[in-house]
Image (cartoon, rainbow, N blue to C red):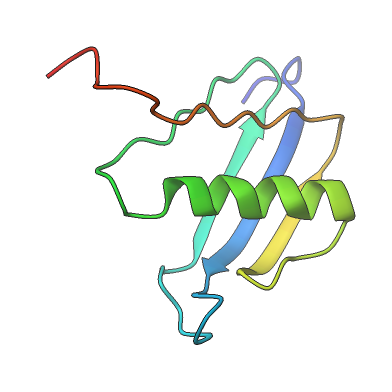
Length: 93
């Protein structure tokens, strides 16, 4: 990483839990996003992409983890998290 790119978000050992029974449904996830980065989370239906984004967005908004998430989410600058749910059939097979 060059000095001109500042770290914007750190996701440190975030783990997702089932809110109904409290069981872990993911391995700990860690990554960083720098200014200018585009981060895409892709995967099959039902693997927890939306749950992860909802947890990160809630944590950034409230400065604390939600009941669905355990770990550390730190915003170093103002961050925008957008969730674009699949509303129709995929454009690509």
